[in-house]
Length: 479
View: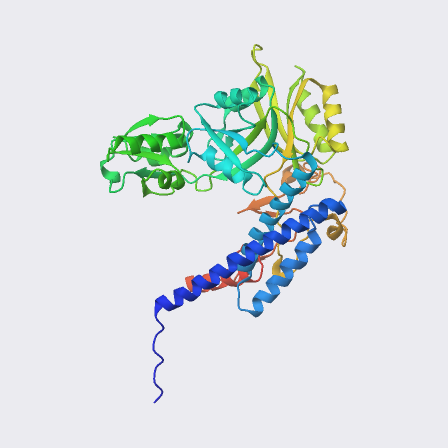
């Protein structure tokens, strides 16, 4: 009778895991060093920032090699999408530094943010410069206008301003400041917001009497706070200031809504995590300077402007058609009351483009002919970079014109007159293709979508097995 192999001690297994993790870190650092060298080569040889075909070949090979090693495709693509994203951002910083010059003359970049160390504005500042070859001197301020004043006095080089949140919307004060002050937008950062309820170590949520936080955080956690009707809400200048007040009070019946990082920074414990009303909560921060920075045309870029249109029917549409005619995507359209002009509006637009390229110059010149006011706030590197997707079966879905031109799109059928009751399927009623988005997957767009699933539902285990198979095979939607 064969003897059973004794179980391996968990401590020994964990030591092996730690050793492999250390090796992974060393390899990631070595890869990043090579990426920096690749960026230098692109600068010297004037090559584009991104090589989509190279990315496609890399991901396809890694997915196929991973399958040979019994690694799930989604694990391989998730890991290497993150690596590629970091690589592109690192190269973009290197290209921009070569193109526009260093931020400063060798000293740290003085950066003004809202609140104290640990606030979300502070985290956005640190994250924005972490790939740049500069150090950062962060300085906290009590208000957005105080930050802007510091920029104008040259007390700081850069100011960090929160401008919009995916849950609570636009921050109007920031838009008003951009119109009033002679500032230039030089960057943006989208920061995931994870609100936590923080208290002194040993504190209990059930005995809380006061909760401190910033007004935006309070608004974004309204549903959670409604479940605590007897608790008093105290507003602070920033989430980090709220954490400091709890720490300094020594009051176990007080808590703050802020990031987990702020809790760690000031010695508070997480009483409850993920308390925001919307779990996918992101704040967009803009970086402003007294002087504009020219952006290398190889770097994906946004331009922000403010316009005022004539007071006549269709004036705004006339301006927006300029973007449509050139196939330029608008990522933001916001209206604000025009100062000293009741019932008139200013419009803030963000669009894909760089004031250094000819198309954007043409757009701005044409806008000037159909608007009564236009102000260019700045062009800056876009924070969001599209990923190269992996299609079902490991084939790639290219996002490049070259790959798309392999098979030309079918000609759209000519619009025919339809019976009045058939508007939903009539090209005469709506000439454009219908695009339906389900969980971030666009059906009807320019990419191939795989929808798969069982012919009938038999059990939960069957559905889970099918879901795993669809995901592993590169499918997009389980039906």
